[in-house]
Image (tube, rainbow, N blue to C red; front, side, top):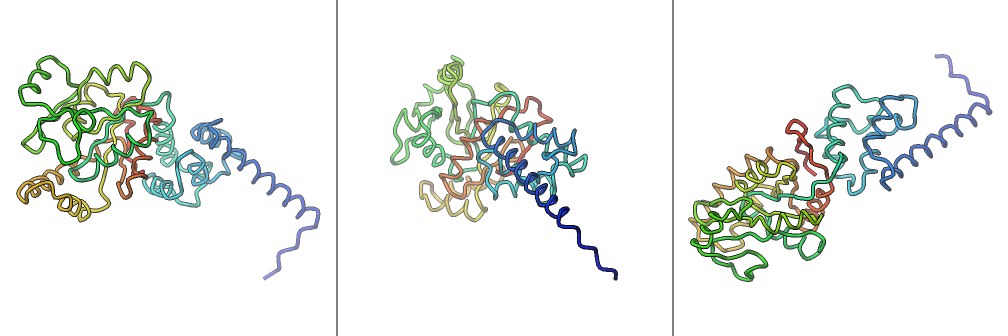
Length: 308
């Protein structure tokens, strides 16, 4: 085999200078995305329309990790969902991969943020705990207080965790059209979201979080399609069972009924715009709050579920 000729020193120096310049250019692009001077979508569009640019040479992984709040672990999950290999560069993506990436970035970086986020999930997944963490650590987010006909659990405060009302009071609120949504949960108690405080907060430009059940989330989607629906998942089914039994607030028969309901609820997760796995409360809460900066997709066909 004939040995490859060694390039002249001047060529090697020129190649080295070019490589440094390319790295600096890519670093500048990533910084512009990180500082929100440019969107990741605009970088991708430039790469696809001008394949000779530095944007085209950027790896997809580098582009996604440049987006504020997207860390390496979450980017890896997103790329797996998009079916894009770790080594792929933005300019080297195939047509189908470009469509998937464009759709994902459009959802995250569209024309305007969704200021109303609906958090739902199966029983005992930790919706209340995540919501409480958001209430305590993100004061700019208004956490809607639901009305319920069930009795308070230990530590729950009327007007803070729920409005605890009688069946007659609940009926009156329904008749007067004061609920954004309401439903009977676990074939026993009724829950509902009072609408006037939500409308007032949104009119003032505030971010609002609703923590409700699956039936309620579906009602909100019908009445307010601009809302972002987030499904909270347990790390595993066994962990969900452990949490439900461990809290000790229900009798065994009620626990089994709730677990049966949870299986039905988990089957509906793909109806939601995003899924968040509640492995650790503060991390899950941060992801939910971040999604308040995500634009509504605008059409049902654009909604995608990515495990963040």
